[in-house]
Length: 151
Ligand SMILES: [Zn+2]
Ligand SMILES: [Zn+2]
Image 1 (tube, protein in one colour):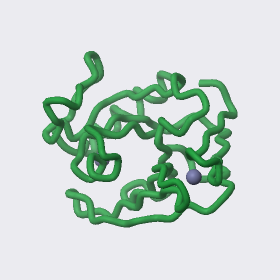
Image 2 (cartoon, protein in one colour):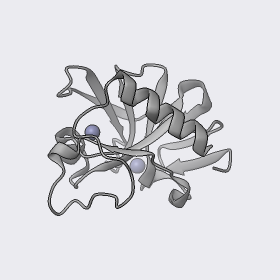
Image 3 (cartoon, protein in one colour):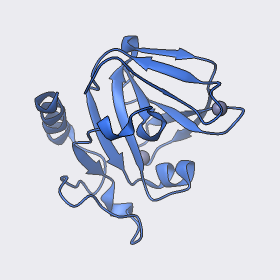
Image 4 (spheres, helix red, strand yellow):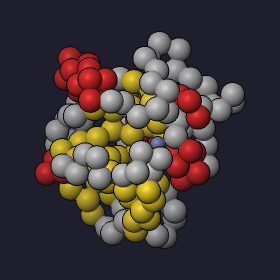
């Protein structure tokens, strides 16, 4: 992935610049992501906090995820575009929705999670590994290794 890269919301009020490769990226088919996106799944990359510079102020809405951990989704208060995720599980990382990237084809997910709640119309990726729910510690280690390998 070419660095730095940038992205923005639909109206341009929120803009970001990223100077480090994502620690990991995935497709999430959980019900919370489906509700927040209005779609079948969301495409997210998790980047070290210090490598993400945000211009403008996203508004955050927090839910208690099925795992019991708090997940806050950041969106543009003017145009409503979903932009960011802050997850209690990985507090040192800043989640960014791939669709907001200026060059979204550079997004490189390594796994698809919560396929247990994937919808029959929310196409699963044909080759990425699937996890029915959230990864356990061993699986998460594998995800980090696969992401590091792809960088
Ligand atoms: Zn906006
Ligand atoms: Zn999710």
